[in-house]
Length: 404
Image 1: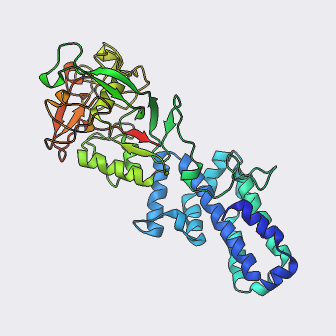
Image 2 (image 1 turned 180 degrees about the vertical axis):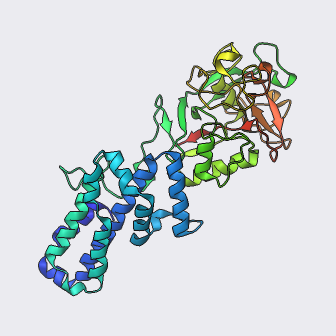
Image 3 (image 1 turned 120 degrees about the vertical axis):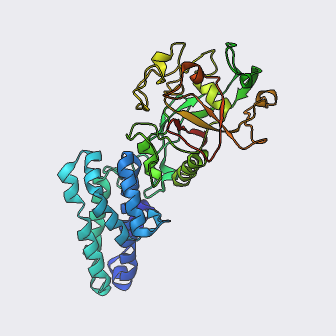
């Protein structure tokens, strides 16, 4: 039930109606209380850094089981989430109101009143109903869920308690976008036509023939998936080199797809994530189809971690120069899985629009080279194949967002 609707229902209750139907008044207060808890929690969960979100998700599972969805929690479960997840403290930080907000949000006191009145509804007075109602409105205003000048209007929305899929600001062309689950940053890649393949004449046979490919617009993650982002959704970090901002590695194709599946399952309706096709990957690596040998230019030292400059391991993402689209690490650091099946002669058979090769073998395409290989191996046109069940300390992935 929407908050503004509950306002109207509570305001319409007369003294006699409360006396005749205390159950109804009590039910409305409980629904409003739980709805506000979920709305505030959803806001914190959407803005918190990945490490905190992961901790909150673990707490949700503890309270609701493996398939837990906090949107179905009752008010006692939500209060437990607030108390143990320190949600009021995080709201205080987000709103900048500190102790003032904490004082206005004595949620346990509200719950105690609701529990006590539940046992003796006939003694619930109109004054008590409106006192608790006003307390909940104060909660909503101080938490930034309602505009205090217009109590029935939510900031940025037409109603309160909307699920994330209705509140999220969908990405627009030209705007960076942070996915609300892991915090991965994406940039818009305009559609276009380019000459795919080895346009410098120094590649392998499977990089030929150079052929014209057209792509629809999509969004590309600006970094490979990091270990911090991986751990928001997955149970174990498989990486051989440990660091939150290092790319996750030692992931098979099947592991990468498991992450994508969980990301899609946890994301608001309308956001669809996938691994890039190799055409999308190459187009984005070459700054939108430019004739670039490496992702960002002709000097590998500027744009990549590879055998000439590595420290015996992967490097934190985003520490070399980006390419012309603002994307990092597409040359070097870790190989990246693509969703295409590898076929040496795929370029002879590609469709002209949005090609993805999906037959004829088992191995999948990997792209980009890695921290321990030479510069030739991390050229934008370089293709390599790998068994989907195998993994290694130089093999990671990045995501694309393919629809809204």
